[in-house]
Length: 339
Length: 260
Ligand SMILES: Cc1cc2nc3c(=O)[nH]c(=O)nc-3n(C[C@H](O)[C@H](O)[C@H](O)COP(=O)(O)OP(=O)(O)OC[C@H]3O[C@@H](n4cnc5c(N)ncnc54)[C@H](O)[C@@H]3O)c2cc1C
Ligand SMILES: Cc1cc2nc3c(=O)[nH]c(=O)nc-3n(C[C@H](O)[C@H](O)[C@H](O)COP(=O)(O)OP(=O)(O)OC[C@H]3O[C@@H](n4cnc5c(N)ncnc54)[C@H](O)[C@@H]3O)c2cc1C
Image (cartoon, rainbow over all chains, first blue to last red; front, side, top):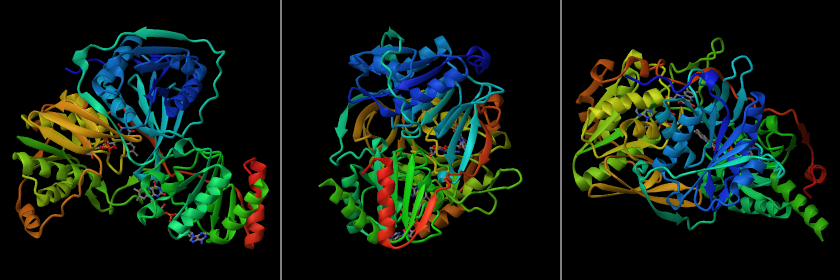
């Protein structure tokens, strides 16, 4: 017989975040999740807890507390240096079974997408993927999880009404990172590494990519080009603009499909979700698959020849014109100012 | 030795429409295809079959029409195709889907490897693979673009930010594959003709060991509350004019934003 449900909704409480480590740092997306966890927990007058698993974790629990955690479960061991499905799942599941959180959030990273479903299946609970909106439903206290599906063409709001914990993954850049407050107090609880029998695989090592890493998710200013840039020469021009603005070059899928640039630069449903202060879209038509990637940008500027281009519907400032006439003039003006 | 490939039938368009009255998905009249990632999963199985022998078994859960994509798998070279289809499976979320697939795959034991696509292009959760591995109690290696089988072991490269994690596990195991792993073959005319005559086994809930309360809507902890079109619109200022006028305007906007 299937075992009885883990815990009824009314008994579960607190919002947890899996704090993913990379290069001995807590990942940006995990810090962003602490921000939304704080909001959700405050609505329900509950606590936020972080789950910190890894090796050499000195100082990281304090950073989590500064970003909104009230409590950090810390499991530090050389066995946990690399993410390993079995040990990490056991750690999260054991904690959840003992303390019955209401919500657990994971970054929708490569490892978050490996861990969260394994945890969900072991806890026999629901998991909502790639949420772009999370809120508490006032009448029921359930988590309202909104996510794109069908390539961003539609949105769905999903609930896990009868099971706890409610699990969700969220992509980087969807939520603004909270600012750190190092005067916040919080509790740090050290726990032992799960037993070796939980191990499912052996990590042989990390093989770094030979190509440079493009970190669009963290960029403050992005200059993005679409098929309208016409080729790699047009992209060079935008790269120049990005340079004078101290920003980062990105593209829609147009230039990637044309083979002008590699897919690491792509923004959108099948690319990166970005959240810059300023996004300048040049020669991008603005299909829905692109727009899902930029909705968190604070300000969107669009340059497009076609006044009916859908990008203008989402732009804060729209320039109807030829990017090859506007961008060089702008670069000139900006660089003259610098000297 | 069996190589089991999980295949999902998906609509052949991202231009999905909603019924304006009910806000339900309109699936009628939308042509279906095999999830593109699953072509790569099949190709992975064929590669392994060429090296080590054994049978390639394609399995799908879905409505009776999902038989079409299993015929495509047969046309490409799969030895056997199984369709899990029962009204009781309707409305399954990823937990119920993976539970049902696991029950069927258990009946196919012994198998060496279960191969899934990294994600489906419609539901797009990438959850079925890892949840299936959990139900089966076997290791998972997700998002891999390289697989090596050595004796009773598997070594794979998992995609990561800025590189790969090289992971080792014992068989049986489950992998989910990216599009970088291989170039899927096209079905031959001969394969197509054979596939049209081939037999697709259909299993209902009575043919596999499942609890009623774990399949379909009843077995799905997640519920879709609402479906709607995204609204990304901002009511901004749009300006037409000469290039000098426009670049001056943009310059002043950037100055206002404090970036220039
Ligand atoms: C499942 C799926 C996933 C997808 N995922 C993504 C994704 O992640 N990201 C993404 O971006 N797309 C994605 N797409 C593709 C998307 O549907 C569009 O095809 C793509 O975004 C179009 O790129 P574009 O705007 O660069 O090109 P186009 O649509 O060709 O637009 C070019 C624009 O440039 C303008 N233009 C031309 N010349 C000039 C000039 N000299 N000056 C100014 N403007 C000019 C034109 O007016 C036009 O609006 C996806 C599609 C599918 C089906
Ligand atoms: C708008 C919308 C949003 C949804 N959101 C969620 C959600 O957040 N959480 C949730 O649990 N469910 C969700 N669902 C339900 C989910 O789409 C279905 O359960 C679906 O059957 C499997 O999920 P997927 O398409 O995401 O597959 P993925 O997990 O992305 O598929 C990965 C691989 O698993 C295999 N696979 C998947 N489905 C099958 C199948 N039926 N038969 C054989 N192999 C298969 C294939 O190899 C595939 O390549 C949603 C459905 C809709 C319509």
